[in-house]
Structures are given as structure tokens and as C-alpha cells.
Length: 156
Image 1: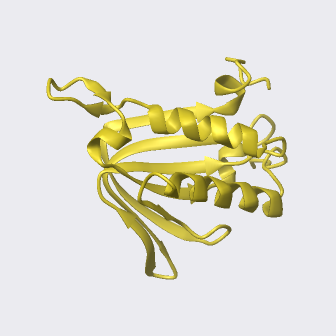
Image 2: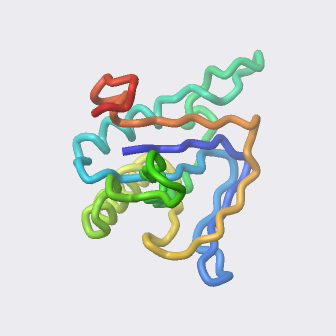
């Protein structure tokens, strides 16, 4: 599982020119699900994401978690995070989770996050237009091969 987390001052997602989700300060998270992912892996990734201390404290140091700033979440499914570009110039997506399984895990992640934070989301499998004002810019990549499995080389 891969999360690309962008600290934003605002973000939104539109489908067919209609806004389906928008947030103020918080995280825009692009979520990629692999074939081997499970709810247990998702739980660990969610826990890590929500505990990230990447907002400024009163001294200007990145020391505060999302909760401390009343942050919001905009969660977007993005299977292209599992693009395999090792061979040729056209990416392969063989490592991305099958659509039914990936959608189930994406919806699970959205529901779990919504238990604690105002959470908006995109539409799984839809052509989406994502807008954001990246704050910093500050972007973090969480990969379950590193976070859960401890493999810094991504060889889960």
C-alpha cells in the first residue's frame, strides 16, 4: 500500500466538472493498493499517517499532528502509484490490486479515517480532477513495504 500525503491549506476533487469532495487545512492523500494488501496493513498505514507530526507548532517547527490543527482529509484512490516503469516506456500496473479488492480497501480506509476526522473522498475508478494548494510544499510518501514490513528497498 502506498500513501502520498500532501499537507495542504485546501484541496478538492471533481468528477464530470462537479466537486465531489473538498477540504481546508489537512492532508490530501493519494492511495495506491497492491495485490497483497490487507485491512491489517491498511490499519498500520492509517495509524502512521494520522500520527505524522508535520504541522507547525507555535515555534514554527513541524511538530503537530493532524488532530492538533483540526485538520481534514481528502482521500483519492490512485492505482498508478503501482506503475512499474522498469521495462520500456509504457508503465505496467500488474502490481496494483484488482479493482474489486482495491475499492474495498479504499472504502475501508475512508471509513476508518472518518471515525476521527472530517473525511472527503474521490470516486473510485472515476476520471478525477484534483486541485490543491500544497502547504510548504510538504509531501510524504508512506509505503507499506517500509512501514509495515521494514524493507527500505521496497522489496516486500
